[in-house]
Image (tube, rainbow, N blue to C red; front, side):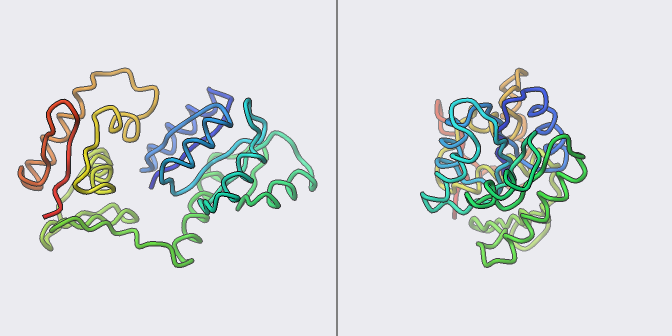
Length: 221
């Protein structure tokens, strides 16, 4: 599951991203309303955590613009404000839920999971990705190869999921670092190669191709 956090309080945003990543989500973070609108419009997210008071464009306008464009991604709004009018305005623009700061992290995670369950029961696409003989259940985070379950770590699953979302397309190392690790990762970028090597060993070397100078491709055979 991919989440986008649009929050200008950087310490809060990074803290939330770390916590949600530990929960098994792939998390992207931006700190500006315009950038949040661009990201949510250009990339497929399962849920957006959207602050209201943002530079560039406030959360109300971001939410309204996404809905006007036909984007039905679940949106959980965050705000330091409190009051029925603010809540009504947020929900009227198309938000799915509303949380007032300061909030409990446990409550935030519970609200996120509730929205994802609600979306899953509303006739949205199956959480199972099938590529050739591989089957990835993004809800239970289980992988089957030709009918047999393969045990993967959380990071291995996240790397494979990025490839499976775009079968036969090239996913760059930079994209992998951004979506599987996080925007602030400053470690060795060759970590991606380590995980690709492990996945090849577990799934079969022929399933993941290296496109020199471009990235990696999961072969739909």
